[in-house]
Length: 293
Image (cartoon, rainbow, N blue to C red; front, side, top):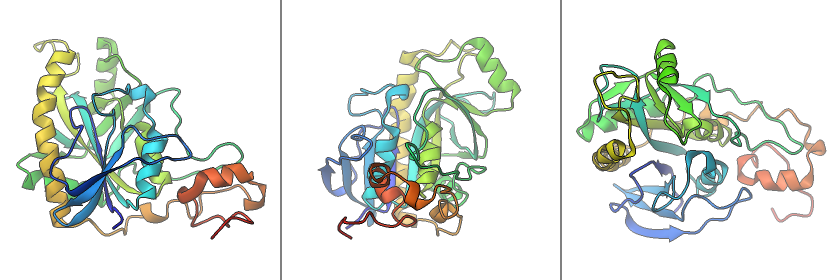
């Protein structure tokens, strides 16, 4: 049975005990290995695939994550809908720690991360005006409500490079932009999910007020970890609620985001590059001559 719902667990969410018939799959991809072996099974009758973004024991820094391998592996396992869990800092007074945000926009302030599957002789330009799937976002918000949370729908997620937290000046700049939360992992995850034609959305779990709040202690690892444990329990309940409710229809455009995006002539794409793209572009590029169908 192929997975349809993918879950990328963020900080504090390294396992998912509620998966029935769970088994661990060690997936190799043309972009290396995922952060961890992927756990596949069912939740509320829905086939799912779960990967711990930072690896069991939190081994990967946000800058070192194998983002492409994670997305490729989930696509290869059959995933069509992808839920991401992210720990974030709040940039708003009305979003204290333990708040849950379902953002609809991102500002990407990362640098040096591989952000596309299309390179080495092939070019594709996908649209990302709406970086989070407009059908997955309300489905996630509804699942949060069922799980006992109070979702804040909409808002802008500022993705910084890390692994250090923001300076006060940076935090105030993000607030001046009108941003909602700040985190370190939504990019290039959202870009790659769109190239892979997955319906992707995230739940941003607030652990702190970043460093702008004068009446709160500056963000620290100890403070963040205390809230992460509580947030991880909520995230697990959200997955169960989403799986039980059924996944939203794919009427959003995510499912054919690549249809007109690949601009390189197929006959000009190097064989090694075409082979590397694999499941990402198989729908739109001819098979390699001599390869098994």
